[in-house]
Length: 587
Image: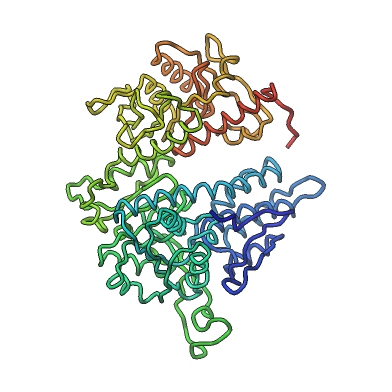
């Protein structure tokens, strides 16, 4: 899709000045923390993911300014970073981006820059995954026919760094040939819809019409709107969604007309530390944004204004929240007490501590969802679909040849795992088995059976907080494990490779990865893994099995896959260089 709207060039953050659009496509070059704060508060940079990534680069700018003769003034960087994080209080991504980059400060300025650059690259991957999941959901809800979607504010590559969230989903639907038209809210008072979204729709060649915000409900009543897609600046623990002012109004209208109201946002937008929507601090902006526009005054002098930048949509009006991990919450018409939100709690909270409060979604559009031939309320189906998608990709890479390898996602005391004896290149959501974490036994009788390697997955789940496990057979890592393996578990050190940072270890410069002996009795491998992880709780979330393959796990399926990919890529470099350890600088 489109190139990134944010870049780091010669010591400066370079982006598109959104204040100048659509009349002028103007580059904005930011070299100081003050410049960045001004860009964020004036909405030259806007959109939750975009300001999150920009916040990370703000820490880089602060660190560069606070460095003298190679020595970083940590207190100065922390103080400047706090200013950046407080530039806009409602969007949680800004503080998230600052915090994530600041955590790398002990490693030096380069480590902070590397983290910001990784966040920039990560944002594109995250957006495309979330957009694809959302497009899949829209088609499942609305059917395979030309669709008319209504959207609010701007959630495209300008609001993120590339692809976009809700607009990303529109792009995917357009590429699939199923998007008849987008109705674009102008989005008062600063017209992000008219100025930015309409510009992005034209840029992408997507048919669209612009409407005033107050006509949206009437459009739902008369123009055949099939769904409403919006983004989010913050999603609280109870499922409340903070987004651009006017979103709440759309959710009410969508419920009245039985139209799905879908929120597309990255995982970084989730804020389980905030219990409910009423706890969100809603930013109040200047009166001049309401009393005039473009230099012209439109209200009597001295008129008082109410100008909140955001509103908060309660969870009962949200049909579904979609992130890069899939459909994490949606409504259900099931009145039996087993709502979709109950079944999705474990997935939604998988990467948070048990003490966090679970999210609870409401009953919006319940009749609509209940009428589906393949309802989205089946948790195994949702996880199975995500597993199958990743498995087909790994099969294409040659990492799951034939029927080899397996992938699983945890569901509380159970795990959904790929069934035995099936080609991973043809896997579907129905080709899964649910097993007990306690002993790997299948929980539902059926023709499909779990692989003996399920013991490897459940051993990881019993000893770690993993939400997903990937067990694959990539060639370079498998070959490397042969030379490193022995009769007992042997941790092997790797150092100096940049890819170590992607493996989830405690240090960025070296990692000790255990190599487990292979056994004909595969469950014995699981026994060895469980024993080792119990005795070494700080072990990294990756391991080798000599001559057998690798296993990786994480707080999400995507993270587990990414770690496996990093381990294989590093193993290939070691194959090429013949060295497991290379020198690193003092930083």
